[in-house]
Image (tube, rainbow, N blue to C red; front, side):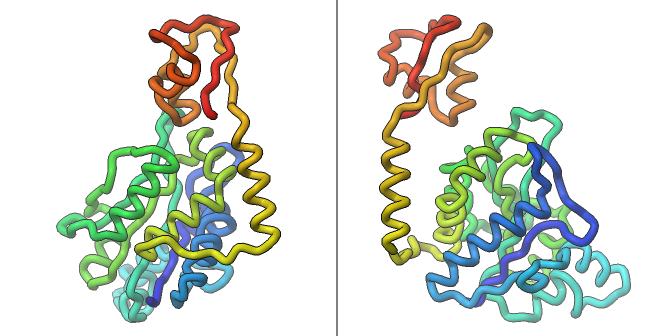
Length: 258
């Protein structure tokens, strides 16, 4: 399939900023190239909006085309004439509430989410938690143009750049996260050739992750807050520590992951 991946923001617009990261650069350096890499392994014809350096901003280009009345050569108008089977635009969300986390897929109002949209949402739910599921919007320029011009398009908010948990998780699990995003677009798991170096890395990761993760309870902590911080559940922490109720105390050492 002919697939277009779009990195959100661009030109002089850095997008959202948080946790030492700006949206424009992180999407271009870490998210889109990795998703493209895995999709190419599956045999897809993958294109990046703005070329290899993703040096353009699809939203600003669309807005310019609309402003000058050229509905053919700019932004999503241009995209609509290129015969792409699938178009996915990637962003990071932001909130003044630093505790808000999770990701979601945005499609145009009036459309029905397809399997790609649902697969992408399931991937976000798995990795960075559910924000509010698939969103249907009519107030975003590229979303509206894509709908009106028949482009198979969706916008993916990968997580909250303002949430430390989301960003730490994405950065620390970048390969697995972007591989699952690519699998979602592909419609099934992509087979990645295993080299000796990859096999060694997998063994090292398994060895590292086999050790339990501990947390020492601080004053004011609750099981709910600890579970949220480590993206697990109260029931899991209770089971790992043989807790009969929600009572915890400062200085108590808990296993939060195993």
